[in-house]
Image 1 (tube, rainbow, N blue to C red):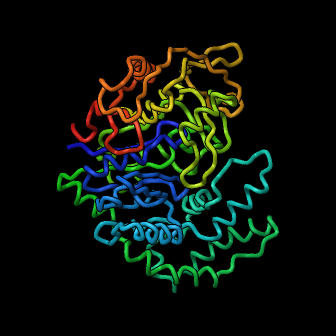
Image 2: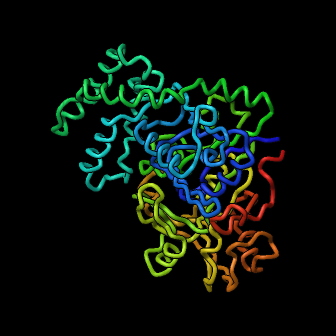
Image 3: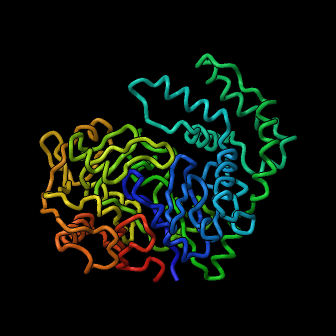
Length: 429
């Protein structure tokens, strides 16, 4: 049986939660391999709605759920999320939940710096969630991070705090802020340490054991490929690599373990926050897509920008991330449109491009080239087989997979787990 890696193939918010939940119910382990608590999943299981931002989606079904070393962990956000889910009847123990002991922590100083920078950036705002994700990753690569394993050695943290404070005190002075209160920080860490350490494990070793047993592992990414720090719409990106290859380094398993790469793709396009968006519709149609799709961020509640499906961007994401097949979501939002459009290329300075350029100015100036198709009057909501879909909706799906040069593995037709048309099972070799 194959392992599966799930990534967003657009700017995130593609409906990964439902798909990951559906797959997690059939997996033996679920691993988060990058990101922080700035990305959210909404899971609908029967009458119960779960909103996750840090915990792997498998936790609601009791599947072994692991936060890998590639994640940056806010221990206070973790505690709040665990307590909330326990209040909904979810069992969370060291048997079914583990945190990599080499996972870096998001500290209060990171959240403060994130907010100070965004407030001072003016027109250069990136549109971060202000949760300290970026500064925490900076400290990780700057070799001054405090990690989960350090929580068991807080009395010998002086040298690490010296490095951390040397960096942050200088930045804080530039913003007119007082230096880091080391004693207050240590007290906060001492208070939260017992909660986090109960789940701390050598997760690469545990995962290796699961792998050797021939079990199914589901690797769960956050955000989307277009927010990847290398391959996304830089600088309007997240602070980690969101591509499928990160599953190997962010979990401690080798690249051969990632298996079937499932790219989650919305039937139209949305984006939260600042940055280029070639097919954005700042009109009645965009408003209609947003209202019908309930386009508000799970974590932030921010309204998402909406536009037509961009086949150029999605094809690029699928190629860069080695996507084996896509899960097409929210097709029902397009029900009732007389005409639907797909972006098939861009015009830039008199030239036609079949890729999205790297420079921010070029990204902002490309003009989409559209292909128009007839819409459909019937409903796709709740469809569980091709026979349930209007003929024109099937034509739309077929055209999407032709343009992005990647086959459709499944189609999601509502937030309900069972409302899914399965074309190819990602867990079967």
